[in-house]
Length: 288
Image 1 (cartoon, rainbow, N blue to C red):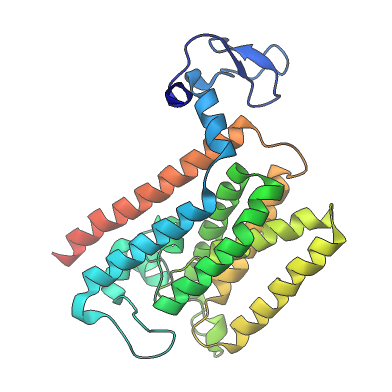
Image 2: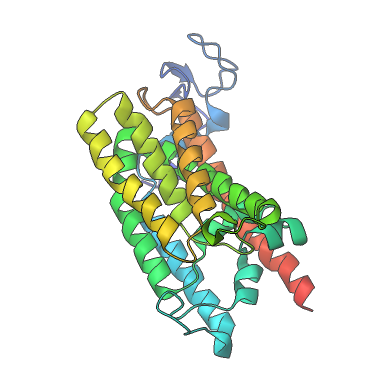
């Protein structure tokens, strides 16, 4: 078991592009021509991660930990002024941890928060509902599209969702309808969750009409709910959905998952962790 997570320096590995056996030190794959098919000897470890990413527990545990941290840092500033604001962290603390939106992105230049905001939540019901849907749609997406590609889609959908919401909050705040103004501050896993739905809809178009009906049975009510429920970030939902759909089309879920996908998924998770760290480090300077 221990050698599974160590760098290989001898023997054969599977080319992450075409699946052919190649030497771990080969400069290129003899079948497809890919350079460095052994991934510096880390190919076997990455492939194992792809089979057992633990995507859903990772999201749920990380989000819960960050929510508890945000409550502890909020102290007496925890808000209890409504059902959706029950046990809500303070806005300055969410800003510190990596909230996105027009104010952080355009007002303070914290562009990296489009990566971090999807792991933060603005209240108890907010995180409970979002984690429920992560638990519902995450395993289904990983099963049909692959765990590594699911991580990529989840990450990209968060970026596209919060980027669109931040842009709308900056340039469309004049719209008289509140649900179409964008957000000054925004957090939550709903943007990447809509990305999972977008990916499932794309996959179902070429595979299963029953799955397509089931996915649409969630998408349509969710969007309608967003238009009638105050405080819902509809641009984040729409951007996340579009990002997930387009990323699924780009990754082509009808083909097998490759080692490249695993490597990119790991980089996505590292970039997300770094975005939270950078948010905290730069935020502490602002609060001094």
